[in-house]
Amino acid sequence: MNPFKYGQVVSTVDFCERPVLVKQLKSFIQSGQNVLLQGERRLGKTSLIFETCRREKKKPFIYIDLLEVKSLEGICKRIAKAIACSEGKAGFMEKSLRFFSSLKPSFSLDPVSGTPLLSFDSSVKLKPESLEELLDLIAKEYTGKGLIIVFDEFQDILQVDHADEILAILRGRIQFHSGITYIFSGSVRNTMYEIFHSSDSPLFKSAALLEIGPLKRDNFTTFLRKKFAEGNCIVSAELLECVFQMVSDIPGDVQQLCSAIWDTTNSGDTIGIDIIQDALEVIHARESKSYDLILRQLTNLQTRTLSGLAKYGGEAPTSSAFLRATGIAQPSSVSRSLKKLISIRVIYHYGNEYRFVNPFLKLWLKDKDF
Ligand SMILES: Nc1ncnc2c1ncn2[C@@H]1O[C@H](COP(=O)(O)OP(=O)(O)OP(=O)(O)O)[C@@H](O)[C@H]1O
Ligand SMILES: [Mg+2]
Image 1 (cartoon, rainbow, N blue to C red):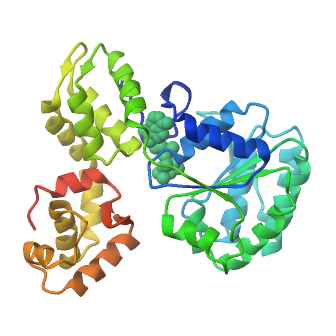
Image 2 (image 1 turned 90 degrees about the vertical axis):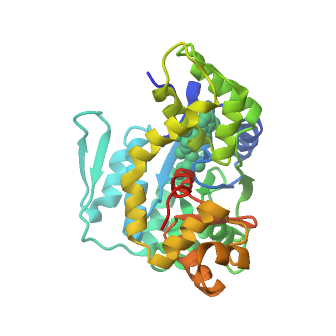
Image 3 (image 1 turned 120 degrees about the horizontal axis):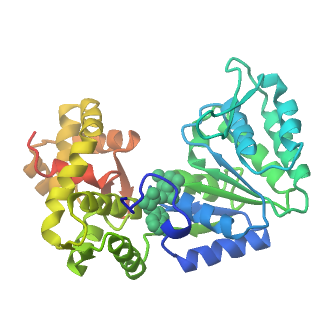
């Protein structure tokens, strides 16, 4: 069985230790300090939260995913689902369902996994105060229990109508819930920064910042070698260095590439750097549909800009060298394309450069001509 996991939360034996971050997060949880956990995609935010909370066995934990949430109803429904999935106390589920009666909930069990499924009438509208009441209901139920509430992909709350009002309600309730640790996690750095660091935002300075970066190469190398050893395979240090470098040390992408290397080799192999190209072809074949979907949304100019970023790097895309190499006449055209590519989350701004959200798309584009 392929031992590499990607695109999912990893825990226990699949979680490569990151002792400093686990210790910091644990300490915030123990002192009831609200936390803003911030880092790029696939760095391991959600896994860090789950693994740390798993180790805090006595503390109840409610995980709310706000990815692509679009309305107040959406937020409340996701909180309700999170309550349904948490190991709630007997009776609390009933109480919260009564609370949600206006949303006309229906409750069933997934026939395959046995997990609770909750659905609501999608035509019902709620008032912002409902969120306030809901948060208080949870706080009351868990008084003195050291509850942890996680809002993941929190940046997406800004897409909701009247986001400021909702943030103000959150602020208003959170400050009275001293026994609860709220963890806000997000990947769109600028947006998260705006919510917690802009002085006119309701959540200004309401959580301690915890920045997550890549895993330490030493730790991750030992972890990955052990996984390869499960198939009696030995990997060269040179190969792993090359893997880290190709995907900018992003753990999810490292694991995806290792998974493809595993699929490309046989048990007992000693694996060297020459395997990389075959492994990449496996990934490109699996992902080609998503590459096509992205390219189909782009204009000719945006495609050339993206291809230029893949071929010539993202450090100076408005420089004359970049314009010459891509054949684009105006730096302003590149700037407009970059804006569009960021808005559809194909690239992001990192330090002084533009990076691909999916590094495999970058590697694929390198060999393509447009
Ligand atoms: N501690 C870890 N040990 C091993 N692999 C990890 C670790 N953390 C993350 N990963 C890898 O990264 C992938 C993504 O992890 P996770 O979903 O926790 O990241 P995330 O930052 O929440 O991502 P997203 O921004 O997409 O929500 C995992 O499936 C796994 O491949
Ligand atoms: Mg996540």
